[in-house]
Amino acid sequence: MKYNRILLKLSGEALMGQQQYGIDAVRLMQYAEEIKTAAATGTQVAVVIGGGNIFRGVQAEAFGLDRVQGDYMGMLATVINSMALQSALEKLNVNTRLLSGVTIQRVCEPYIRRRALRHLEKGRVVIFGAGIGSPYFTTDSAASLRAIEIEADVVLKGTRVDGIYTADPEKDPTATRYPEITFDEVMEKNLNVMDMTAFTLCKENNLPIIVFDMNKAGNLQRLIEGETVGTRVSMHGSNAKPLDAKHSALQPTITTPTE
Ligand code: UDP
Image (cartoon, rainbow, N blue to C red):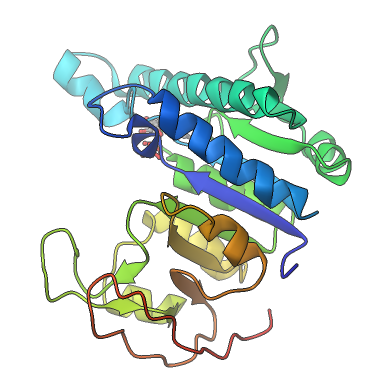
């Protein structure tokens, strides 16, 4: 396998499926199956899930609530999603542990780095809930930070788009996908990969990010096996040009730098 240890970031919104709110049972099981297959390869798998399908701190003002309170509500939303994923994985007989950045001792372990590493070494899928446990951050930042702490080889950002495009492919039909790009190019071109805190953490710690379509069955495993899927953001890149066609099925040969 290409990676010894990965950190998979899933957005809360992705869990909604076609719904407007909450968790779609079919989508949840689909993700659990993909994670089970990935873990069965022997690659150690850690997961961070967002909470946008339930609550985001920025919504707090609209409710007339305090922002910090709203952020804690968002963190608790990520714990709900994490518990759902844990349960779905356990249904598939995958050993998991849920470690939370906010202590909720009846339902999950507190986040302790050494404990997370031990679980991973034992082959358990580790889910990090409640982000980093502090307001004014996102789960993308939690994904970057936890990935650095556990010395993951890569952050795999599973989205509903198959990579990073020159423009938003859902709005601009002429948008083209980059198979590979450097951290510096992402910043120069002002492309939207992660929020700046999360992105900077990865850049400064030379941690590659791969943005890929999590809804396409088998993509996660293909990535772990070393196939070129989605867009890889790294320190060096390969000066690859964007592909021609929108959502192109073509997978160009790319020289992947060794990190
Ligand atoms: N959040 C936070 N600190 C963290 C992680 C998350 O305050 O370390 C809050 C924040 O309000 C955020 C919400 O939890 O909006 C849900 O996370 P996020 O928006 O990242 O979820 P996603 O967009 O991935 O579904």
